[in-house]
Length: 434
Image (cartoon, rainbow, N blue to C red):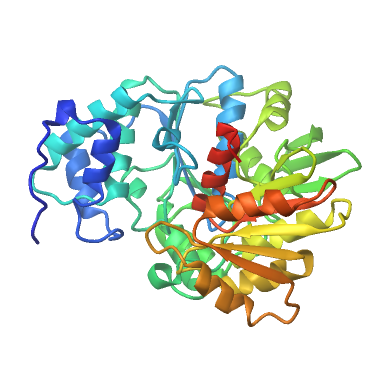
């Protein structure tokens, strides 16, 4: 396997942008699942056995919300927490946070220098390089709790080189079929790869495939599933949760919008229950975490002359949940959607699910690896039954600007389809140029 030519700048002089551009060319493929490369480099770095409690979070959807709730709850209670997530919306630094704050460029670059020195001639992927850098940063941060979000799958994802104290699996559905399989049974086996022998595992999906239970038994993990090992019920303005002899009543609903967030929160409370001896939390601290959590790009509403809702939903399950949440809101005269997706996603299912809600489609080309073009989205739109007006644009920003120019007071703009789509629009909004 040939390696890229040496970078002209010494490691210490590279900016974060330089490092990231160079890493994209370091491995011949964008994605190559497997643990051997990452584990070998991690051993040289001495980061395979963190002193902190490790929570590894996998799942088709709900990973980000689960991480955010755990981070907020333990952080507000005074624990020092580090989180590693992906992808980011606006800045790479969002991927690595300590005490709720993205680490700065210099700290990331210093970690990249260490990873580069330790890797020798090992060609790491972009994600592997970032994962190892996060572990280096966390090792020096004196953390109480380290939360690692799986990038894709679980069994062969780079974060899985670290043994978790608790393995967490949010929801299970079909996505990334080219790498994980095209059935829920197959995908559950890949997610189950984060479980370990004699270690608790939590799944907040109430309808898990049999294969997840089979994998838990095979490895000897102590799996607790929503609806069996722990439960919740809704009340008028609050909810209650119970597991075994533990009962929490009159809980505040999570600040993250969407009824499905109660399932994510239920899994979070089971993790907290399992860790009470090691990291105790009071009812008041749990309630504060649920009430105080925030996460950009997950049914994020921005009020103004027209209602803007942004969501990174990019697979059938996530888009269905988004539409169900949208249906609970008061109707508006007209709804625009700014849509940008990747080639690898099921565009037809997503658009069919959105179709009853949309009056005007703004279809954007996504300028990213594997991004679908506006023409490809338009071709998919042509197969819809209810063909509301549609226009194509060369960029997400152009589609967003067109939607804002056409939207009238009281109407609604939806921005959906990928992290890239939502991130670009958020960037335009925050710069005040859209």
